[in-house]
Amino acid sequence: MRGQTEALEHQHIVRAFDEELARLTSAIVEMGGLAERQVADAVRALSERDVELAARVIQTDRQVDALEEQIDQDVIKLLALRQPMAIDLRLIAMALKISNDLERMSDYAVSIAKRSQRLTDQAELKPLQHIPRIGQACLAMVKDVLDAYVERDADKAGAVWHRDKEVDEQYTSLFRELVTYMLEDPRTISTCIDLLFIAKNLERIADHATNIAEKIVFIIHGTEINRPRHEVE
Amino acid sequence: MGAQRAATVLEVKPNREHHPAVKSRVKDLNFYYGKSQALKRINMEIYEHAVTALIGPSGCGKSTLLRCFNRMHDLTPDTHYEGEIRLYPDDVNIVSSEVDPIEVRMRISMVFQKPNPFPKSIYENVAYGLRVRGIRNRTELDGRVEAALRGAALWEEVKDRLDEPGTALSGGQQQRLCIARALATDPEIVLFDEPTSALDPIATASIEDLIISMAGSVTVLIVTHNMQQAARVSTYTAFMYLGELIEYGPTNELFTRPRQQRTSDYLTGRFG
Image (cartoon, chains in turn orange, blue):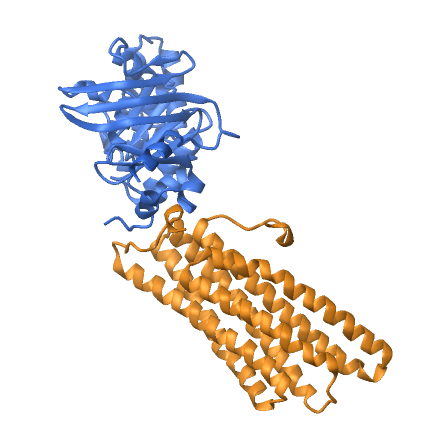
């Protein structure tokens, strides 16, 4: 894989530039780690009816936002001072977009956590059992895409990209099931709507993981995955 | 890697879908200073009415290649060319010993690193090349001097002081005077060798603006150490290293996603 693309193993003549890039990358990784944990905890808080865990997910949002701000500032400084080219330019520009995707993921996790708090005093519905399944599929995508970022592995990123389809299908099937529930018993509507939004949030989290996968491929190869997602071999 | 690179060099040509006509074609060009080979089998097409930048570290051969285009090396003893630089539309090999270098320089003019106006008036600096070409008619001279000075974005600043010495102008103005001098004879190609490295940022910006605006009517070849400058002014960029053409393509592609590791290392400041 390496031979075809631009490698980063050579150091910059200006060593401070290497340090700045390392700081930027580690901020992304840290942000990714926080968002990943938020998603995992939000799903667990929901299935285990853990209000405190949900509160922790909500609190973590501030840290994620602070990291996003730091990344914004670092990127602007790097662009202004280093005038990056080629792979450096792609890495830096994509840091800005990836941090945005991670921030969105974190927001969706917060949204799930808030709904889970509301659902604790509701009677449990069967469709709730499907949420952790979607949650695990999303979480696996988030984890793998972060690994792909750290390892600069375009193949791994590509694999994540293809998995978005599975989450979409799971979401669609859960959507149908929830609609059936609501039709059968209107008293479940309120709970079902919450579950529906939670499932939608998870589906969006997977979309952002997919976006990040595209950006990793762009960083490494300088090309876009821009064909309709499900048509790509 | 060696064989792979050689194969790639042979096919380095910009995407041919929407480029302008070919103004000049470099074919298997080798150049030697004595026994030392400074250019190694260069093959590239220069596109008409576009700006092509040559970049690469010191000693890579970019200035040597530029100077081949108006036979500047003829002034240096013990140098020789192999291969061809064909100039179109008439398809003449301008590095052939049978072609008079004076003829070549009539068609391909050059602007150097340091502004070098003649120790003459502003007017005479521009009119000089025209007079050499036998133009004596004062009205025609006046018209062409003005057109060249306008072309070099200098007319408004000097129109009331055409008799003052060219050397009395500021550095940036002197360089624009040299550009006017180069433009006066309606060259087909203008060569720029580091045209702004002796100028401040404001004068540099005005020269860059001028180069970009020239591109519609004349073919420009520019050597620059300033990669951002190459990125700003050129449509095509060639990266050279150790006398070889490593990569050649549309500027925006070369600077954002170079195909060769060497290019990437150079652009990103990773050259060890």
